[in-house]
Length: 250
Ligand SMILES: [Zn+2]
Image (cartoon, rainbow, N blue to C red; front, side):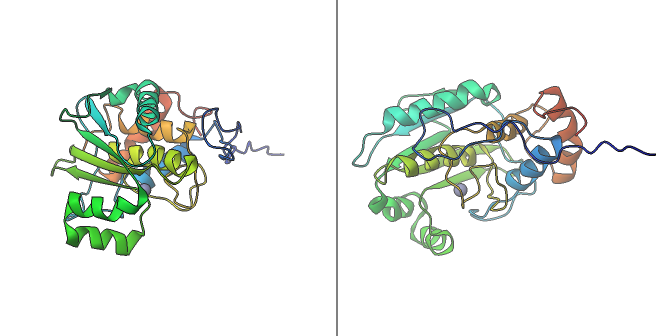
């Protein structure tokens, strides 16, 4: 008789949403197989449905410590809440080497807090009428991030627009979602049940899953410009060395 051990395929370690997020935020799984992490990383770190101009082939991310500023605005004051979220990213993903700078200083990442009714005008001001019209027609956006990178895949500047006047759930979901884009996870995956980069879900916190994807992206081995084929080869050792999977070898 032959006994085969079947590797667990489903995420496990279900936990309620952490304190501090909106009422009704979904619970999260906290343990994933290497395959579940790899699949999500390959889907979310390559390509983008919000791209201006030429499609870069490889990984896009910052290759130096990241500065970020929050430009408050809109009718609900959420600057302090936004900074708290940024500090959470800085602490939980040390590879970002993320530091908040004053609103008036130049920074790699700009987070602009706005009311929904000013969203279209903000897009026009940032990108010009033609590009803004294309975004609005294609994506019916609620919040948005634009990422500018060079030919080598290094991000040179990110701008995120986060809406503050449509309640806590919209603000929190947008804030966590758009920061992932700003750091280089530029795609969406509407079939992935664990990430906030699935536009059919509202999450509103930094999940264990998204934190793992960002940790992989900012591992020194995952250089800007890394191709999907190279990333596939790198992923098992990065996931293993950083202890991100539930058990080795899965
Ligand atoms: Zn998005």
